[in-house]
Amino acid sequence: MASPLPSLPYDVLLHIFTLLVHDSRHPRWWTFPHPHPLTLSQVCKQWKQAAMTPSLWSQIRIMSASSSLVTLEKSLSYSMGLGLDIWIQFCSPNEDVLNQDRETEISEMLIAEAHRLVSLTFSIGNGVSRLPAPFQRPLSLPNLRRLIFCHPEYYSTTMDVTYPTLLRKAPVLGDVAILSTMVHPLRPFVGENAPRLTKAEFECHVFDARDFIGLLRSQPDLVELAVQATVQLDVLSSSNIPLSITHSTLRHLSIWNTDPTLFRCLSLPSLHSLAVGWHDDPRTSLAPFIAQTETLRTLSLKRMSFGFLLSPEFSFPHISHLHVELSEDPLCIGQHDWRGISELDTMFMTEEHTVLSGLKKISVEAILEDDSVCQRVLQLLERIWTATRVQTIAFPALEKLAYDILLDGISEPLETRLQTLGSANQHVSYCVCASLPFSPYWTLLAELNNELL
Image (spheres, rainbow, N blue to C red):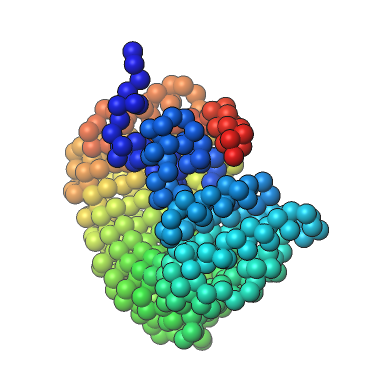
């Protein structure tokens, strides 16, 4: 049978190439190599015609220690003046003079096109304490809209003063992600001279609620905000806690390991979705906040007690989607997860429970490595599935169950039951997959890319 590829219309082939070359996920890391347009252009005449489309060359990924300067030069040229989305990795330790010179040369090539930068992602390797010298200079970035800064080295403070330099002349910057162990990553975005953001994400070593409150006060246009910390500072005591902090545009808030008293002072009248994790005081601080925020529709809870959802003291009829995550990582199911499973079990076993009377959908995300845990999660899903069919008194509006579960070492009968549960009901959407070894296809693709480039 003849291959259908030669008969594909140009626009269809271009769309396929766009999906291959451009990564639509959050571009903090590229786990797998993506084919370069130069690779695609060397297959046949038809592919070359599609692969030379300028938009395919405008997203550039640079592994500074191994990237070809010729390939980078071609990407900058073939993108034909379009806005550039740059992902660049700096991984050479300070003592590696040879690779540092190469990184400096690459940086100078990019800075020459600074006026075209629309999105800029830095991935900083362990042992690297500073960006190459060209990026330490104040730059004019008139079109930069997104800045992502990844520096995973623990307890590092040497980069804290580097990325603020990039913010001084970026007038349209609206989307930032600072993913590092910096102590105070929020502070450059606090104050009258800070860039006006609409979307921000921070991962840091220490959560300081004062910085968080300062950010809300300085960023009136913020729509999405995510903050995750390793350690929290409980600085909001009853004596210095503000009476109220109101932010009228924030619609999506994701916050992990926070000062438990923070929610007592927040007023977010436009909030639509809230994700909370590792919160130690949900009954006295989080529950009143959720009950009072009547615009809230989606509630996501990660690695924490769900017991406040069982209390008749508060009611949450405005919540239509409850999402629970039962595992932080594939290494363990923690104490909070065990307690959360039991609390959810209780919630779906009683017909008198009316705290979530408006709930329409519940979704469960889990990483399971143990048969006993898998058995309990499966029983929980079956109870929720039953509730969606009979629409119990406690959940009269419930109509949808979704679950996304990664299995590692789970027995085949349990895996089959999870698959069967999802396929047996049209109101259930599911994804159940077993962890797989690293595919040799990706290794082959990486070798092909390196050979052609």
